[in-house]
Image (cartoon, rainbow, N blue to C red; front, side, top):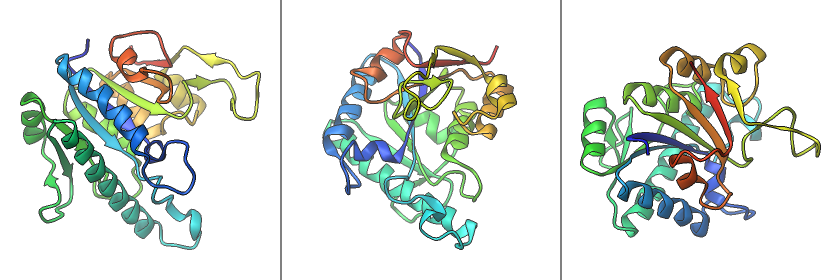
Length: 235
């Protein structure tokens, strides 16, 4: 078992497979229940949640200013974090939402010291609003927080069960890759995690596991070290 993990959830994952909804409670509580089980076994858990169920950048207006579009995206992640934090409350766990920007009494401002203190008290920490600046994805924030908090591993929960040599949605013969070097992701420009996140993981030697959220008990299996998904090696 890992001592401390950071889990990256896409915003789209919060909607499950339902059309036209932002939140699917069945999906959300399935994830929360797995996290609670992991937490009860002694692993410290922090999350980074995307905002894609609410906002997809400039997809609705290609002429929109990139900075403004990214700022809206940051706020979308805050909404998701607050929603998921309350799901933890309903399961008897305290979850704290930290952001790099001050949002009144809604969130707590991020610092490494307070984040670690919350984790060591057995609380869940959810990081939202990115790093407070545009042009940085939630993948990059996940890697950054992982480096700052000395996480044992970064877990990227996706809507596919790992990395493939081609798009499995369009190629039925696509082959799953069980292990890939972080430098290969960078060198080949693979769209697995973004390049800046991959570079930071490589530099700081933070291992990464990319797996399918929709597989049964996938999060628990990942934390127990089962061979699921794709391992991104950094050694």
